[in-house]
Image (cartoon, rainbow, N blue to C red):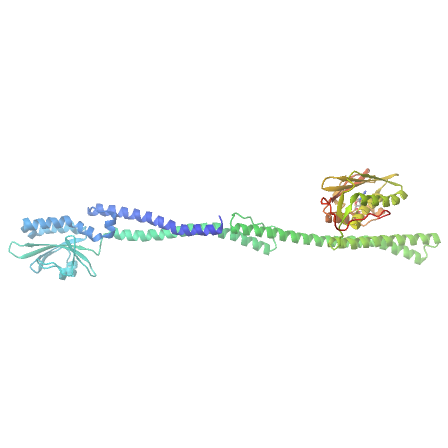
Length: 510
Ligand code: ADP
């Protein structure tokens, strides 16, 4: 769930759940307390009435006793002079927060609760009159103020002719404890429900927001401390989950960058060590032979010529190595200004073979050329750099041919999207273990064998980079002792261009 939806849901939960729970709880509390009121006070009333008009209900509580008094006053008023009878009535009312008071003329001759009577006595109605500041409530008179009471009165005459009034007084201050309980329980329930809802929401928010944020924070701290292997897994699909995914992507990229930088630093170190080694070997030879010349060790013209030739060859090797290094540095930094043109691949290779044939004939190497592709097939390539690749592969083939009769076969195959160029020799071959590494810079299979042959170990690395820059691939297949095939692909120019510069083949050499 998205964070926005989550907040909306949280909002609804915050509103709806407390309202719902409060309604259910309040309903249950009121119901239970109403039942209790009905049972304890023996009154028939519905819940609404009890809540909205408790005075009316209290009025009903004493209705039975009051009616009995009324009847007695009419029929047998002398009974009302009987203190025992009055006491009994008073006891009946005791549990109903009410008491009896009997007044004879202006004197109270009986009182169930003198303290309360003291508060109210001035407001009680005179014999035969209703109090002016009182309100009639269904047979009873409500006397308001700080201490509200409900008073029911019945006038009668004593047997000696005295004016008597019997009061049934209900203390409204105490109301029903059940009603108070309803209020208290409702408030407690309300608070409990609010706390409960808030807790549920807090847990939910913690689970969905704070926990992932915490995981993210831990991940960030790990990265800050340099631990780039600490991965942060997103558990949700929301914005925070997306943030975790972005963070994870950032970590992976950062790690890749750092790994690349470390690898680069390693490569630089290796490069420097290789360069110094490769330069040191011919330099030592040059130094030795020139010392021989200076010291007069080479005392015959033949020896001197041999020494000078060796110095020349070694200096030449160094020059080639420096050139290749300079070129490799350029190609590695992508600073080779390629000049891509549409090339007719058949014309291009025809020229190539023509030129190579002359060189190879001298070395007793036969060149076999097999071209089965459509003569109009074109590729987009840099003719000069492509030539560098072909020369390097053929140069290696020539260098590593160990048979009396060297054979180099060049095949052009159309694979659909690509033109596949295969250059096969019948040379010494490459041991299986070395094949995956021969395109690495400075890698030379079987170093002892190669030290005699010379070479920088950069040729195939340069070729690989050039072919990859042409969106092609290069690989080797070889059997040790039998021969090697270097294969590379060039993307065909499907949409033949009718405009632009085209490669114009030379008839004599490239
Ligand atoms: P080098 O200048 O040493 O030839 P390359 O990068 O051109 O460097 O080749 C890397 C290594 O691959 C060589 O040292 C050699 O061991 C091996 N190799 C490449 N081509 C051939 C081949 N045609 N026959 C045998 N080994 C080869």
